[in-house]
Every structure is written in C-alpha cells, then in structure tokens.
Length: 304
Image 1 (tube, rainbow, N blue to C red):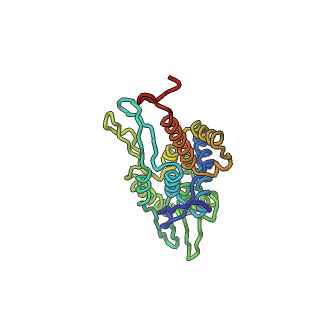
Image 2 (cartoon, helix red, strand yellow; image 1 turned 90 degrees about the vertical axis):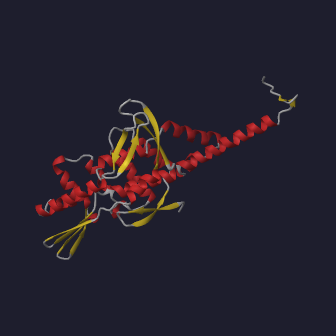
Image 3 (cartoon, rainbow, N blue to C red; image 1 turned 60 degrees about the horizontal axis):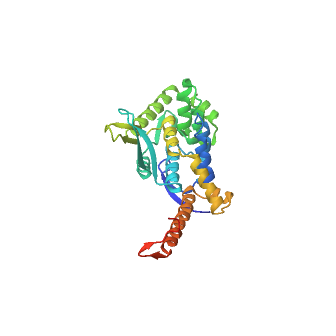
C-alpha cells in the first residue's frame, strides 16, 4: 500500500487518505507545463489525483478540493516550502520568495460552497465546478459559459421525489439537462454561484509584497475560476527538468539505483538519498585530511 496521509476535503466534508506523488508522475506533470496551453497539465494533474486518491474524480471532486490535494501532495512528496520568483512592478527587479504551503492549505480548508435551491417541484443541490470538467472550460464557447458552469456545478436534481445524480452522467448529458431548466431556476443558481465566487475571492491565494517598494508584486485571489486555479497550479509545479534529470543520472551512475525503482519513489526521497551520499563523501574527505601526517603542527599537504 505504501505511505499515506489524511487530507480534509471541504467539498466532501470528510478526510481522505492520499498517497505520495511518485517521481515519474511528478516529472511528467512538470513536462506538461512546458506547453503553451493548459490541456496537457489538466490531463496529467488528473492522472496524479487518480494515483494518490483512486476514484475520487468520479465521486464529484471539485476544483478547490483538487487544489487542496495537489498542495498537500506537493508539500509531502517534494517540500513544504515553495520557492518562487517575483518581480517588483515599480522597479522591475526580480526577487526570491518562499511560500509555506500549509498557509495555502489553511485558506482552502475553511471554505464552504454547498447550496440548495427549491423551485416549484424541483430541488437542485450544487457546489462549484468539478475537477473532471476542467478540460471543457479550456475550449469553452463564451456563449455557453453559463451552461458549462451549471452542468459542472450541479450535484443532484430532484423532481417529484425522483433523484438524478449528475456525477453518473457525462458532460454533454448534463449540459443538455440544464439547458432545459426553467430560466428562473438557472438565474437563481447562477446568482448563488456568483455570490460564492465573491465570498471565496475575499481570501488571498498568494500575496507577495516587494522588498523594494513595499507594494504588491503578486496579488492572486482565491477563486473558483478555472484560469486562476490553473495559474496557481502552474506555479506549484514549476521546476527545472535539467536538475531532476541530473539528480536521477547521479543516483543511477554513482549510487547504482535502478531507474524503474527511482520512478516509484517520491521526489523528496531522491533528494534525501543524494544528500546522504554527499554527506558521506564530505565525512570521508574530512577523515582523510585529519589522518594525514603533520609536521611542526601544520598539516602535511602532498599537493602543496
């Protein structure tokens, strides 16, 4: 089974057990961000979610709960600190900033977005956009935006005691159903979704103050908007592929690990192995120098 850790998901109002991200999935996720569009990242991030919590996408995981899982996985499997580069808007100077990921998790964990609307003989329960639908919002027709939002946010529809669970339907089927809702009902739901967005956006997902001008260099609000969520996801998994491949090469060539074994480990474990190797070499080097013969109180250096 391997190591697991629990994560609280507000959308489900429960805790789930999650696995670590393996090095291969982490590497593929970083590769996906080298493209100019987010579609590859959405696909690979969903693959990661399915690996760390199997089946949860089809249970109705929403986009903010998905972000919670990714933030926790990044903290546990790579590092609890995220180092980012920002630019002062007034001086154009670049500077480094370290974000503690537990602060992001705390903000995401205290949000509520469940709603219920009754209209005549219809009862609709809804929350926010679901993670498995993200790909559709990348290619959306603006004229159908409200249809997409409704189709993805609705959880169940009850008509005369007959319950329809939206997670059992594909995206097109859900779109067809919400288009047949009464206009008044759709307007009520859309207004509630807008109010939820306003409430959520009062929190800052990422706020970085410039050390040069003491003004905001980054001001990213928490949001249910797909583009903002993906923007933070890109920041979360931006890494240097060359460094990762160099690390793997060193572990294989110098420590003689098998590549397929390294692929199954968490990235943090790869860095730990390499760190232990460097520490061992450092101690061996210091021991060798200390054991060299000395004359007159000075260390004898044969290369001097």
